[in-house]
Length: 498
Image (cartoon, rainbow, N blue to C red):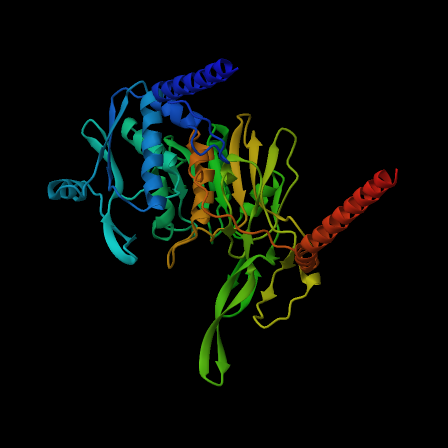
């Protein structure tokens, strides 16, 4: 008997040893995370398989970091192992600890990797430590810098886009229409910074010429003036040759200084209507919204307070589509509802929706910050705020278009926008322009999981359930034990008398 037990134990240990050796040799692992955080995407694999020259990644990471930061180093190293294996050795890497020597620290800073200060607990005291968490990607004489690898960020997107940027000779051109009051490069600097990784942004004017042939995607953001019919015909010709189009349009506009909102027209309304798309001249209001700063007179003087402003909806409901992959919250600024009844041959996909407690108020509107809103003011739900249209938009060539019923949500002239505001417009441009699939990687690192808002009745029910259920279970178990003991006593007494 003992021999069989020892034999079984030895076999189990042998199997575990063989599996461990095989996993080290072939780097096999199971990825059970949400969104497959540790599985390389098809886009990355295509980039790695198309490499013609070796790529070297020099990772400058400090050692002896706090556990939550040290995990970033392990994750990055695991990813580099995967890149090296999947590229058949075309990706090579090494790790350098700049804290070991002053010369290594100088090397890191000269390469664009700046240290950050982190708090470290040592002997019941908190002290600050200088740490490096960056990498340099080299291909021949060209280099790309990842100056700081943020814990929890989309590492695969950063690494893959850097490799792609180094390996391509010419980046695709993205045209930005100008000449009708559209957003300027200065107002789009946050978006341009994101796009310039893979594309070359270029102004396009249609006064006397067609869309340049090198432009694959034309972007129209917040036009304020009317576009002439002749220029719309040039855009039709662009679409007829397979060009892609992104429209971020304002159908309404708000003036917070004057507390009024009004409708605007730019000539795009009739052009969209021919393709079955209507942007209503209404303001979407939503119980999920941003806030504005209001000055209030109090006994202590003027105080600034934050008050909800329902004309700034925060969208958190998205379709399953590459444009909206990984998005969590997008805050719009005076957005309008969008309706679509496309012609046969055209396929419309709603992309973004308002919440289940929203509404659309016809322009013009007076913004009363002290208005007492009620439940009946938010009587509609899931209003469409953006959509994608595919098919022969002009001529017989099938192409793509994205329409967003707000032209201001990505502008950064005075402030930085939330990351998902920029991710939305960048994702849309990627989907229209880039065939590699890198759009799915930009938001792969999930950083936020907001709690779902519950109704008051549900909260009350959960509260009393959490309080009463353990008590009821304890009482029930006690009654059950009492009944079992009673039956046992009766049985013993019966046996004794017999």
